Image (cartoon, rainbow, N blue to C red):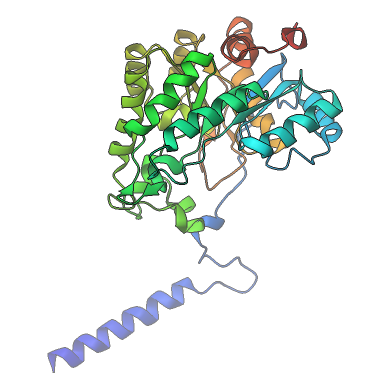
Length: 369
């Protein structure tokens, strides 16, 4: 009898709640998915949108996989419209693929506007001569025109040998890091992903919307390893090779914790950082981020990651203006609003091109003068 009464009460409550949820005719449906909620701001403040940077800039983090056949005239028109002095294509791959890209750049006569980094193939790491061959390939690629080495996040996440996951600080890789120091070329390295990808997929996760729309990005302590372990491996490489210049991609995934990043920068003077895909983290903490940029103005480089010309506008606005409460261009990356850092001309010049020109060998500085 008690159970029967309980069921009746429960059904009545459900009926009442459904009545409240049903919209009146002509009214919007109040039942709306969270990911659809994106109201425009009603805040009325001065706005200074940017479509072109104040000074010429080097994009240290771009990807053009088909540069061997790409229409580079079209690319240069887009670069000029943005005031991009130099595009660094990190997807050189190496060997014949790199040569094809370099040949195309030379055919168009754009050696002073496009630089290419090579990559390492981790296939066959169980072979006893793998390290020796990888170093020789690196030397060949640099002789062919590569200006640096890009390490993708696959190292630490998916690269494996017969024993399983290959850690970033695997001793077989040490000669590669050392050779880059000897050749005087920088290593731009992307390790792991945002820490939230390893956290529970629930209402407490700040990247919930991104994980919902991109579920393959979810990680765990066993898929493939804890975030902290992967990052520690990367930092171990930095410490082991003080004579090699590293550029830590995406602020090393510490753009949301600048105090920790500051301690790392102070401890390891051979690392630099770039802010590709994390500008939204910086724009939501304008005072702290501005102080950080001023302190480390000689070690921060402009990076964007995926090449989409209109997305650069947000980067310019965050760096150059004092605008308030404006949106990021990908809501699933950042559902919050941002604020401009209003950096000084001195700091902007360093971030935009001076630091990159100093770090990357053999660039034509006349492009930026």
